[in-house]
View (cartoon, rainbow, N blue to C red):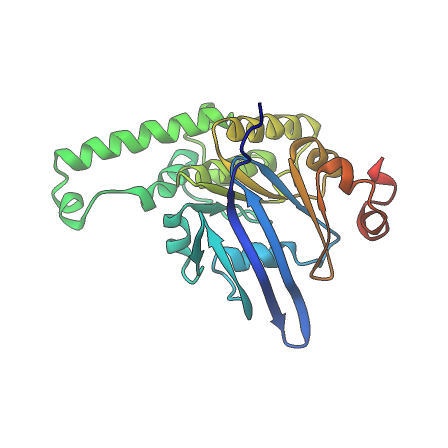
Length: 260
């Protein structure tokens, strides 16, 4: 019995981005299928983070267009991107360092808040009910990423690996359809990377679609359903991990001996 493949959640069509005379993205074509983990790899300077920045409204593309859930999508304002259902983490961690771990997660729930100014000023029953709901959700997310016992720590006191997981939990607090992770394993030891892999697998099992930039080739090849390889702002290969690791262009540009 054949099964119908999932439709693309995100479609990137002919995206181009220049910085002066430098072409950072050269007519990028990409489809991220709903429910999959899609890896984006390539050497430093290949355009991976630039693509994330265009996708999430930090940069505006010079040419091309996006579709999200089958509809045209123009990522102009970050809050609109998050409200639509796209959340991301950053290559350089961006947390509220002087806030607690728990409060960092609660901030991420702001976009889904149903409170208005009067609810907040009056602190009425609806306000307290939603505050309790937000707190419970935050604890659940901290448990999911293995940080529940550190809920009341200041974010700045966490280890680098724990800060990475906190940033992922804060992104999850927005209830994304697409979670874009920019080098989530950076700074993690082998044990933390194993925990990260389990977390991403559990998110996929729950129906979350994930777009992943990562330099750990072993992690990418073990996690991703599809891998796209960029080099000098162009897509040089795309396919299943087993295909990508054997592609001569990819080996020459990026993988080298780490392909085996």
